[in-house]
Image 1: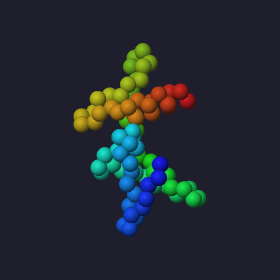
Image 2: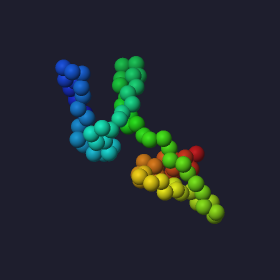
Image 3: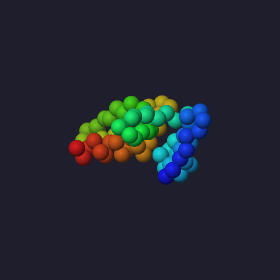
Image 4: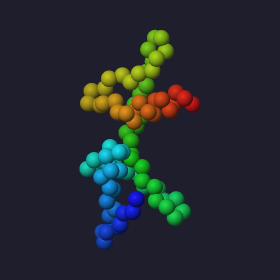
Length: 82
């Protein structure tokens, strides 16, 4: 997908990409320079604390003002598969 840098050095992230990654106005991205490439990654909040039920099932305890996102669940699944 081709994008263009404007005079101010800005790049517009296409709507399709923003929607797919859940990026909205004010979203923060980390930028990494890799030789001749640039990598942008959505900055995520620190990992949510994981707890375990008495029978060994993982869960995220409720935290006021914080929702469990699909990314939280995917991170949990990835961690459990390691």
